[in-house]
Image 1 (tube, helix red, strand yellow):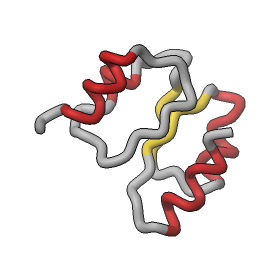
Image 2: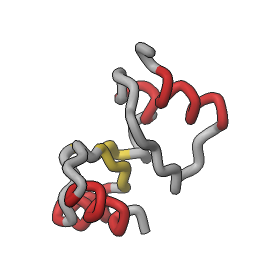
Image 3: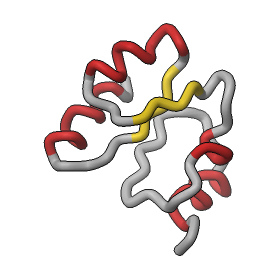
Length: 74
């Protein structure tokens, strides 16, 4: 489902970091994601170290984790 969000984000000029499981990563990459995080093996919070401008949450993440991704370094 998140792969559908990658395409308009890329068209808008965004640098896209997506999460995907290994079976889905090739599909998400093909839609235009710049980086892919294997959410089954790595925490997004441990991988993304800079604040993000837009966060579309389609995966299970706690409200504090969501806030941390948006406010890092701010």
